[in-house]
Image (tube, rainbow, N blue to C red; front, side, top):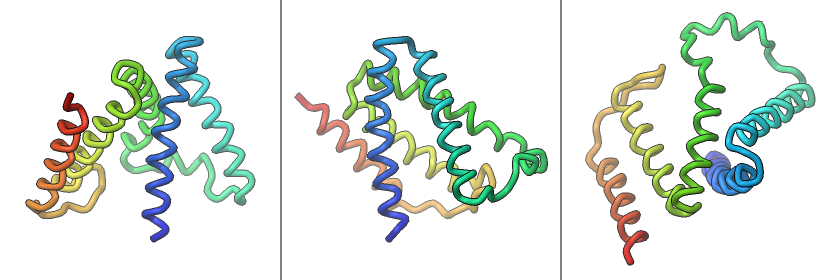
Amino acid sequence: MLGFIIAIISGALMSIQGVFNTGVTKQSSIWVCASFVQFSALIVCLGAWVITGREGNFQDLIKIENKYMLLGGVLGAMITYTVIKSVDTLGPARANMFIITAQMLVAYLVELLGIFGTEKVEFEWRKLIGILIIVIGIITFKWK
């Protein structure tokens, strides 16, 4: 149950963050905004690390087996940029519908292929049908 609640909070925070970042971008620039977002995230993460007992250390990063896993920050910067641009051009609701649909589709493909260290799962028609229902929902939402 806790996982569901955290996922819902995560989705809500992502939607609000996209709107906030788009507003900051309109008053500054996309790269100034993205830099501030990443910098403020660094400060919050370092603060949380200190407050919660400093579990792990930064030297552990050198030991990471699959070095491509360290590209999370690069992906975070790209996510910030693409969310800002999509919210700016499509609006918050439409942008999030496409973002969430892409997340579902890519996450399912990652599981199907068992890539990036995930456990490979068998294809299930019901999951594909679920994604198709989401696409139908987008079409319905866009319908004028």
